[in-house]
Every structure is written in C-alpha cells, then in structure tokens.
Length: 75
Image (tube, rainbow, N blue to C red):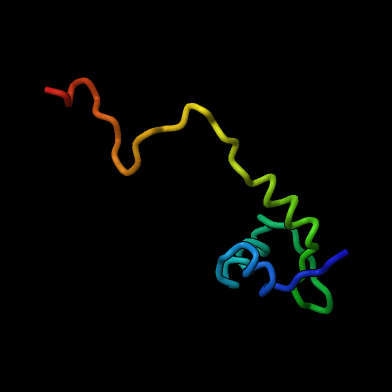
C-alpha cells in the first residue's frame, strides 16, 4: 500500500491543501490518521477519483456560456 500525504493528494488533484483537509473532514474522500496526521491510500484515492467521474454522453451540449433561446424569446 502506498500512503500519500495531504501535499501528495493536493498535487495529484491540483487543488489547495486546505481543500483536501476540508473534503477529508467532511468525509467526502477516503482518509485516515496516523498519529494525528491525515493520510490517504493511493489505491483508495484513485478509486474515489474514478467514482467521481461524470459519464460521457454523445449528445453533449454544443453551446458554452450561453443558454439556448426559448421560443418566446425569439421574436
């Protein structure tokens, strides 16, 4: 088992260490403590990332940043 620190997980996820602490405290991500220090199993974090992935959809929205016009707005 590979054990990761907050700094390791922060770099892996490209988020601030404070975000990792918050997610762990809220039990949003798998973690454990060793002598009071927050640690993570690399395997658990990889599985957690995979569970967080959104499924791809072939019918993706083709617009970005704008909502589609409603019929009543097209006058």
